[in-house]
Image (cartoon, rainbow over all chains, first blue to last red; front, side):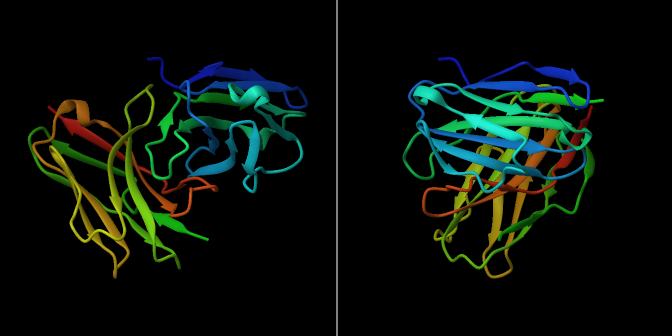
Length: 114
Length: 116
């Protein structure tokens, strides 16, 4: 069975440009999470989908970030316009609906804004 | 809000030695879960071990075990007979009981290096 996959693995963009990150969760996983790790700091929660609904988006930094999960399958995270401080590694994780089941992580997308 | 603190940015031990990674946390919750995740170089994070706060018995997974001290809010990870493949970033994480709507709260991580 395929794990959580994220595209692209790396992205280098200029300040002001738009970037869209994609996450394909494990099939059948209702929960999908986005996290971000800025260099040298903690991995921070961004938001949580249950199927196509946003359960919690309290961690989204600002309105330049837009996450979607149309149809409850894959999810996208768009940053528009990107700023220098958006650089970091963006992780996606998925898990079954049941509480306390293991969250499976993707390899992450390393975003560099120059 | 919860916080998780890992006070050791990097540790290095010889192969076959035992190593303990420290983690402390702060929360007002009484029911929660604690995790240790491992991220090998250029690979996904994987779950190493999980502890339910209501369980007094420390979790164990083969060479990995935890020392969970609820009153002290401490959750250290012990790796016995360390192997080269244990080289990775290790993250301690916390999740509230109740579905984890706001996900995991992570520490900054400890970079563990196993020397041959």
